[in-house]
Length: 148
Image (cartoon, rainbow, N blue to C red; front, top):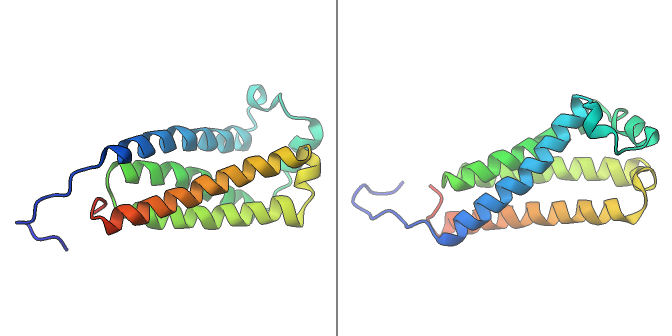
């Protein structure tokens, strides 16, 4: 625990850049999850009937993992901006949620075929890379004393 006489670690400029950009990126994921779960017709009209049937056939554990991944990512970004060390733990849970979702979508089901080939796989890989980078960044900020 930090001593009250120790000077507070200054927030580095890059924390604001990473935090704000990740907040915007992760807000898109949270919106996607929410619009899909609420079956918002205007949002879902871009998908084929087969894709919609696929989304709505996810087992509960996959839906929960997807929710943890998307809403946890948003929470992780907020915690990063608040300089809260829980950002690391939340981002770890996000990676677990992403892994469960990824395994279901691309190993245990025909997600790549239903969603249209390799592009969804590349997009998913990008999401996972961003998630891993946010986890690594939060860990680095804890080590530097930026997150408390």
